[in-house]
Length: 64
Image (cartoon, rainbow, N blue to C red; front, side, top):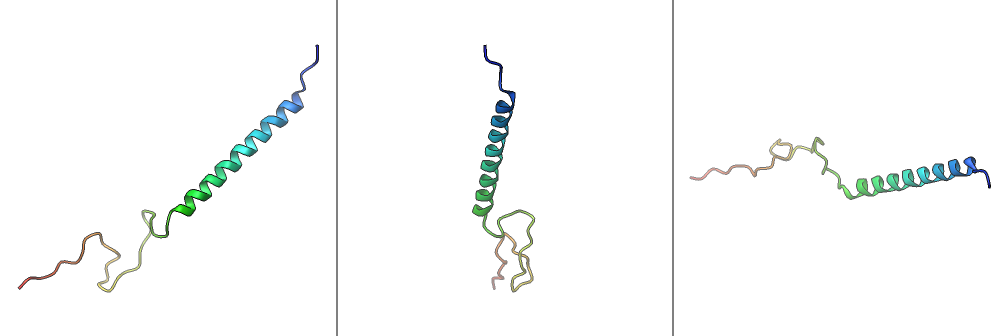
């Protein structure tokens, strides 16, 4: 009976880990590329002409 080749098995496990990590890295890069600038929460936007930093509500208008 042949003896197990442990170094071969170890090398295969290492290659599988590398492949998995590379796929994960590429997936993260794709996800990062899909997020547009300013989409992340906590990122400050530049103030507009009223001095607001991009509020969700439109400015209130006065009616006569």
